[in-house]
Image (cartoon, rainbow, N blue to C red):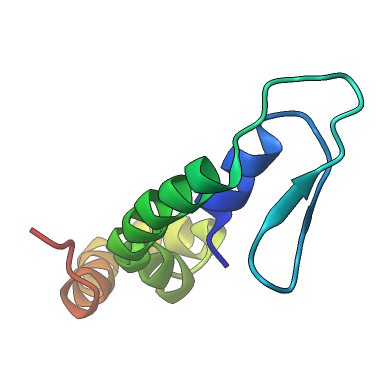
Length: 96
């Protein structure tokens, strides 16, 4: 699920529905400015590309230990913590 795209759709402040054919209908009772289908498709492609480029961040977030556990490990074993963080970064490298 591309959260970037759905946040962009929600930013218009108008309820919307996604149709089975991939089109979107805005329930625009207040005549707010909303994108047309062509603009939606273009923005979706752009944000899908960005979403994929950030996959390494989502993978790392799941692989890291929770912050309280990391803090405890830093306190007790700084070298072990560094090694664990490095192993996650090596497994999910930032694209260049």
